[in-house]
Length: 151
Image (cartoon, rainbow, N blue to C red; front, side, top):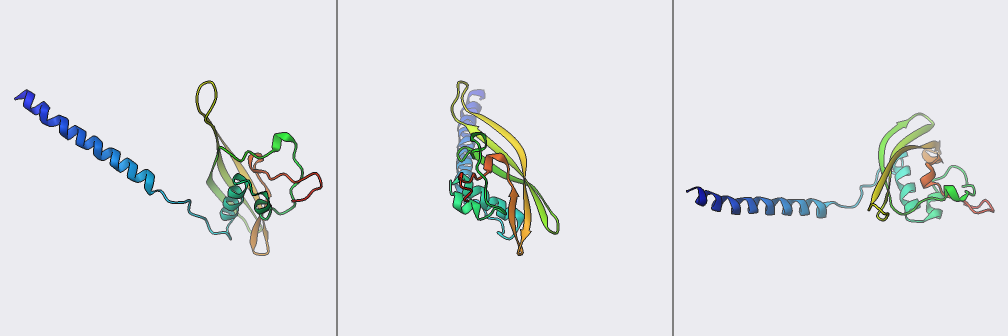
């Protein structure tokens, strides 16, 4: 009898594991595109600006800046690849706002395999004609102007 019980439990166990794999795959593949926040909010401005920087579209990113970007030294060149940005908190006041973000930088290479580093930083925004513009951005997401001072 004990042998018969083990024989029946193995197919049940395999069926449960198979179901878990199917559910996990369904969750992974059902994730849609990132939901865009309202563009008239500080978080929405930061989200669009960050996406433009990561995509390498400095012209689109510069449209969200309060002032033309200044030239950067090599240390401040934005890292466009291997970044994940998450909204942590937004503090909105009458004419200014701070948007705290989590910035995860990851590297697939290296002598010990992949690595990740997470830091938190803030964007500083100012109200402009009913909308919001970025006055201060984390160094990883700065857009650097040319030496001529162009956006």
